[in-house]
Image (cartoon, rainbow, N blue to C red; front, side):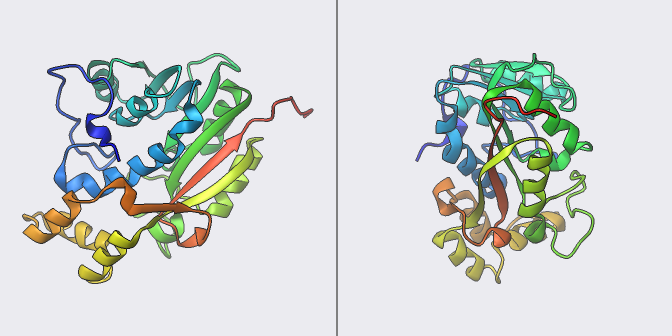
Length: 266
């Protein structure tokens, strides 16, 4: 299994990964490794859908994912509103063409993109329907939208508002499916990210929830116990499973949706 923090073409002397803000994950930080690998597995799972394609990553963040996609795509454009992230990607990942812009108004022509990638981003957006409409506009007929987002049922259980202050609205599988349909996409697959056997063992070891153990230590603002640090640093992307079963118990939702190959009358 590749380590995408070092994958692909990276300029010698490139800057260190962007600092953690709580809004995005970055590679190369031991205490962040669980979340990074949980994101990385989705890129690995769906990267082949980008092979030989013109790809837009809408909300590219630190850029490691767009760089992974560049291994197989004809070309990759990253788009992010954050100026520091855009500058970082341009310096660190030269294979990624980088734009700065608003995801509610994608700065691209109609029908110009084969694949739009949007991983762990839509939950941050204020106008999610407008963003999906923009994805539909820029995708060529038959184009594909690859999207992942935290499962509201497990990420913010029993709450009307997200636990994460950077999230505006979280979705469950039914809500995401409905939203994609309203945007005139056809949902090809809806799968979920789950803990595999290694992570289930760590759940047991750390009092029932490996995630809660990390959050508690982060909120405490104190050094992490050595065993927790080692367990987090040792996580690999293959320690997660992506499957269709038990979708409502999944950690993250992963959808593949297509724009119809022929136009449908309004």
